[in-house]
Image (cartoon, one colour):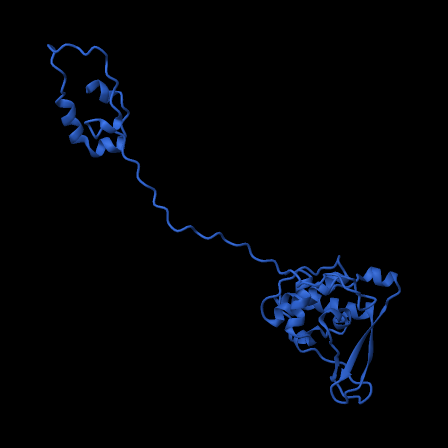
Length: 248
């Protein structure tokens, strides 16, 4: 038994916890009598599971308790969504300054190269209900928007200022009432985004229309209207002037 126990590698932690029992086993060997005839053939050592000394046997392997599997963290969904059946990312451009991509306009260099320097939009007076076309000079009005952003960007804190949330409307050329001409908005895919930008009237859009714009331009579209409106202004400026300082 001595020889057998010395050939088996013991677990140090198990031997430490069973020191008394181990010492007792080693002090009282049970060797066979010297007068007994030796067995004709040597017997193979018994398996470790049949050893008389439990301290020398390897410790039983504890079953690993597996708790409920943790759900995999789902990646945050993109701001874009799959279009419904029958819908397409491309449409017939509703205006000469619009691209076939939804909610996207051509850049300033392209428009000037094509001789498009006047941007028209359909408006209606809230007082006399007259409808007519209103025209903006592309470069002059865009310079006003760009200057406004440069002067007020730090104070905006990624939120649209009151001047954008409640824009000052043009005066009616018929009844001559002030601050009463609003842009006419129809279907979302036909919104005249460039016209609204130049007149700084993007705030006349509903939140759902602003979310439509951000959806198709891969911008985050959750949150209050001032947040989504701010992103819409910057994205339109970025489309018109990709080299400008219009990052968030």
